[in-house]
Length: 593
Image 1 (cartoon, rainbow, N blue to C red):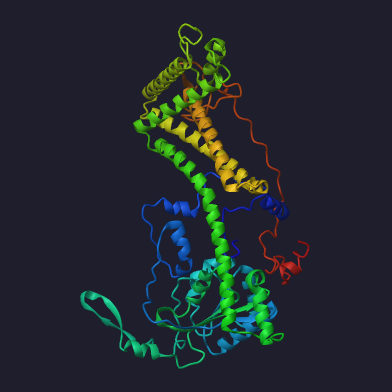
Image 2: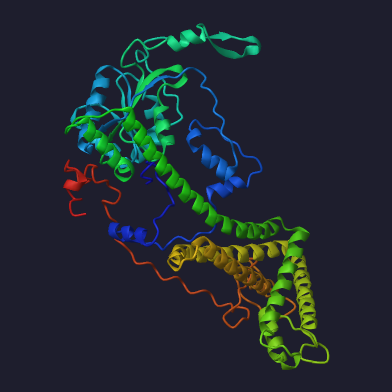
């Protein structure tokens, strides 16, 4: 559960063994760590679009980040109707208990006036605490968090009814025009009326002059409309504005106020000393509230510091992802060849085989400057083992005299083997009546190798990221070190990818699946070997000795250790105990948990 939004995140797991520890504690099957198959940051994902634009009610506070990351300017559009919501100064208390007591008093007071109240919380835990306090006072209310997210639309729709009390996390109901029930709005909306316009359009025009609209105020104090109560300030002013913006929409009246204490996370970490001095200067006693423009300004400064800190963290993350982004573009361009197929894929496959051959030649000749010192028998054996390809004349010093001659001969032999494999697949097509079998097989092998190697590379990069910050102890820039090592790892990845592709493609064998109960029918390639694989088309991976793997069936997986089902799994601490005692779970069977 995301503690900030209150939403469930299916498929997400904690890292570093924490999830396995919780699974063991709860008596469910312990699963292994998840493996990343593909990753990209939101910023680089959006950068892939040629054109970018967006619309949100809270972009102004993030103007700098939009410009720095996306090179986008923020333009503020005036509201459709004048805003009549009254945003009060923050109310600050010394302790969290005093703050909660004051919130309960305000909720009860507004409830007696018959006004709807929306209480915004920063996390699920606070929403549960406030729900318990309201229950003690006998006030009927609705809680909107992860436990009741299926009823979100229904709860939000009723949040504007007279006397309703809704407790919501910061995600619930934002951007929604909460309709006010009868009797909640007690005066006209700024004298604005609708009238018909030409071509069937509806226009909104005030009957009053702009000066009269400015002078028009709600006759009630405090005003009518939806009451927003914030239990604490969020780290970002943007989310505070989203909470306030649920009231006073489309010219409706409303009011909003934030209750805070010096024990709140934001105040404790970023602003409590300065505000505590202000409270001492004003002589605030225990249980006494302080509200002053200075306090609101100090809290705003604390939020700006947090926003800047979070922005710097996102910017640093983007700098690291930019390194991977260059590599991602190369890998995905090759993957696109495999997906689209055609002549481009065949040309790319031949290029990969040529590069793999060149890499093997360089590896075998690395220690020899003089061709007379070459171990020609070893060169012939290595090419035969890796690519099932023999180089004509490699053992004769009179035929192949230099590295370039060896490379040309090896690449020509590999290209011939590549074409032979395509011809072999055409023969299989004719036998089974298939179409495009060669292109499908080439795409299948290419995609398999790319995905497998990229997945392993992402794991290696994650391991590198985890420890790279320790380089700062050696007076080195972790980002520069990460760029250098990631590049070296990527060069190794490309060499490994090309070599593995060449091996698997040149060793590919196809088995034609037999009818049920009938004998299998194998079709062998230009070079022998009948690997027994399941399915109509498989790419055999090289075995430990570098040759085609045998047809022995894979060993059965070991059974996972069983666990007895836990009858209390998923029961919350404050939920009724399933045993039927009527007690809370934490006071009954959950006491020992």
